[in-house]
Amino acid sequence: MDFELLNVPDTAAQADYKVRLELLNLAGNVVHVFPVRELASSGVAETRFRAFADSKLAFVEVLRNRRPVFSAPRRRSTSCRTMKS
Image (tube, rainbow, N blue to C red; front, side, top):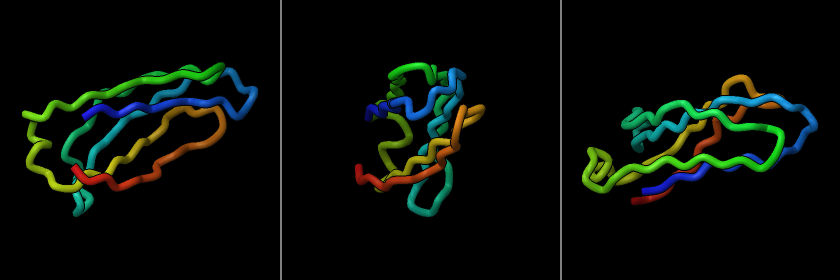
């Protein structure tokens, strides 16, 4: 599974920020945490995370994601969306 986080600037602030991707099961328990990545807020920026099919995630039927943002120039996001594997 590949996950892409994309920054599209919506402010003139010029500060980098850090983001972490966490995968949760249907009960809300964290089943995997990817390393913290840094994104530049000055322009469009992306980072990608990859989880392999032979990992422990293969046994989780439903994954939700949470994306805590640290040191954001304007706002923080921890929204979740559900996706089925």
